[in-house]
Length: 107
Image (cartoon, rainbow, N blue to C red):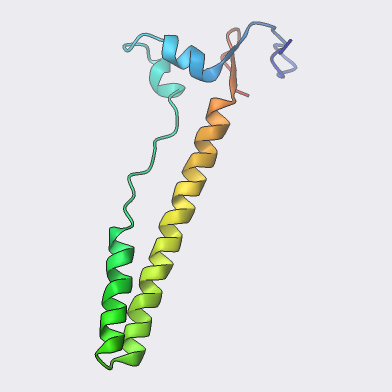
């Protein structure tokens, strides 16, 4: 049995956060408070385009510039990938969270 970890509360009246959030009416102010983390709107197209342009510049003879553009594209792709991984970790933590219905604390 799960109980609130707050030493001031210790209530056994606990719910799964995703289930509780879905059961809230749309006009509830708690709907925004307990909302899941937003999924990032990402696109790898800019990174892929930069890598392709870098390779094209490399084949045209601009070795240093081509390498710089391709490395920048690969770096941007890595940054986007890390942002997606962080957002998914936050979402997984939200999905496994609980809310105390007595003190409204999250844990």
